[in-house]
Length: 333
Image (tube, rainbow, N blue to C red; front, side):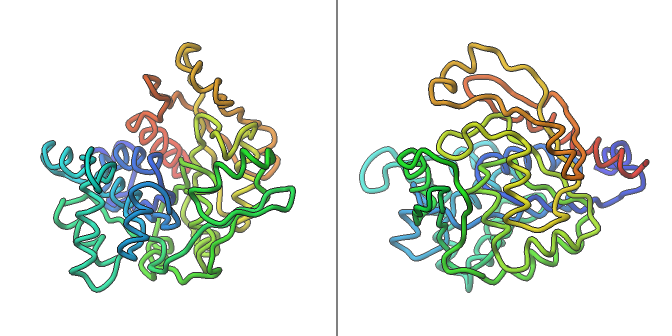
């Protein structure tokens, strides 16, 4: 561990990384990052209200466990059988589609004093590298407003509402507004050497964290290096036709000036056969618009980051290596 840190980050013995987001993008990145430091804090959105998480949220009154579970598993140091068990989804009965890991976290919540305590205790059980924090302990929902003035309440409804409205999202907000952040989240941001935003769904995974009171301001005040990890593709029902510069502008609009120093983007060419099913849904490789980003005073770095198989994803190891390289260069500058 120390040798890896010396190789990639000269002089840093315990690089403190804060990764902010949600969904599969964040957990993918965490799998690569845990090879470089033990000081990782994942700050995760709790605005999800769909799927198995939404069911547990409605029936048990807990915060949505799905994104939290994915991050815990990404940082876990357990036997493969345990990982398979926690990732297992029931196929029959009233639990059909529900993840055992979600139920595990729900049960832990039942014997804990708060949701963040339940997350901490589950992390201890799985001996995770670093820690996972919900951005807030308050129950919040996500509302989207479209450029035509219409609105929809509920993270899981935004995709369908965007299809109906056939226009861009103007902004999103949390309901109720101004939820209080978890103090540990603000403390982690203040102490970080490196803050990462993304990758993940722009409006439903990354931005909701910035809408919690004090989070965007804490990022802006931090002396850490702040990196936005760009998505590889646009997202159906959320960011069709967006460029990388559009992503940056949306984050600055919802957040605060100074929350991004550098953007890291994929420059690997994706096989055409891999893109066919995506293009049928109106999804394309993200066009960066480097000039548009640099005009905002933000640097751009490009690396081959895509792992193209049945699905296009970030390669966890390539992404972590690129992040460490950008940070190393900033230290040597």
